[in-house]
Image (cartoon, rainbow, N blue to C red; front, side, top):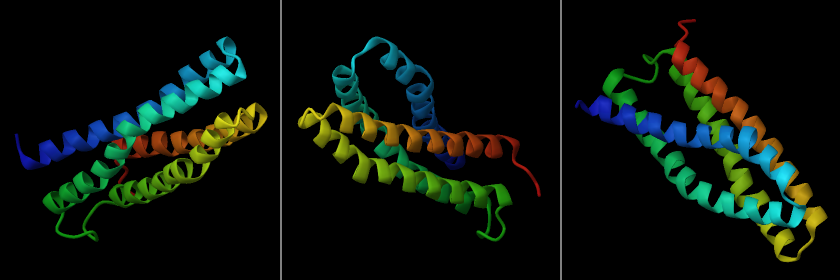
Length: 154
């Protein structure tokens, strides 16, 4: 296995964990939780889901730039020589990272506080904000994956 292949495999796995996890949460888990759980149980479930998911996403978020920069150095002589889709990938990663940090650092503590205080309406409102940010991040992630798969040459 070449160094590039190893970096590519790690990069792809990290992206799949992050984007695939958001897809699962948005398209499968959320609708199932809404139809089967009352708000207190649903909010507690989401706190546990976020705890477990972020244990995987934080390493993925950190692996992506290291493997990406490694592949960049192995494949191109400079950033200027990299194709435009690589530049787009980096920009979209930064946007996704900002949204992820917003959830982790700002919204998730608010959700924990609301659930701890058993303030279910506030918890529901915070969860709704998290859902919107995750939905937007999922759209960016799916766009990023599509751009990389297509590798446009414009």
